[in-house]
Image (cartoon, rainbow, N blue to C red; front, side, top):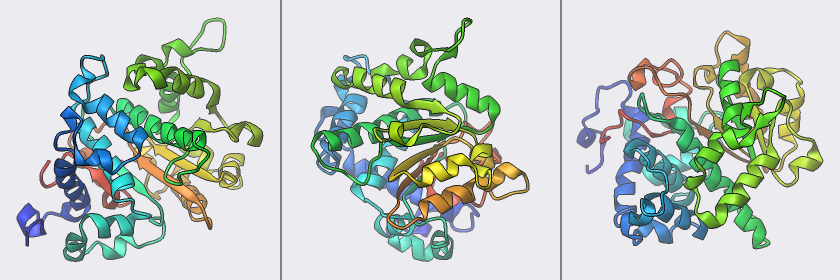
Length: 338
């Protein structure tokens, strides 16, 4: 069968099933993105006008002429596969995404029981990138994709449920938390406060076309916050909260209760090694997110983009060997046809 496990040459590999979704999305991207450099790809008619403009800016032939940041092939694939899964296939949850992306592989791989368990009832995308691949640039691109689309919907007086201006970024640990503070808030000033001009958001301002750049930077400047998050009134126009697993793992804590009160939420998880339900207290935070995501009528998207592994994908304790990771991988350096 074309596109089957046998054709992929993965039978007998313990990671074959988990990586099949990534392989299926990558194969689909080859057709949908053919001609993208010239601005004529089929994908451009299958996504929002905002997303189409971003794809042309990022991957069009003129991107270099406009000094748009250059993406590594793995970064490019991570962005494209996420957008294809979310906008083109529009899976409402993980089982639906599998049924739309690779139904024949799903039946052969034996993953049906795993992907239908509690915790997969919402869109979720795992980005497994090889060592040395900068994840921050991918995170910033996908964050802009979410926020700009949500903003465009508001400007039109509508509301696209696929996108959100309420963003939560979860650091892997306290050191990672400071790194994310530098990404979104800037480096500390000697006299106190932080210098926004030193942020990665400012350094990568070229990720966005000039007409959108200043407005997005201003949105980040106004909405980036730490700790327990903004007050309900401040969050009405959006939120970019930066936290760590400990704050989400606190039973009865303020942050989980605050997040539960938001109408929608997109989570960028950089806490790879704390994904599993393990022994330390921080390992309880995925269950807290599952409760928030599982509320009736909840609009919730989770994008997992942990720090780069030190070795191959199977050497990373937060990704390659974690049972909570494999089934929602949408890109993986070890996928069958990577």
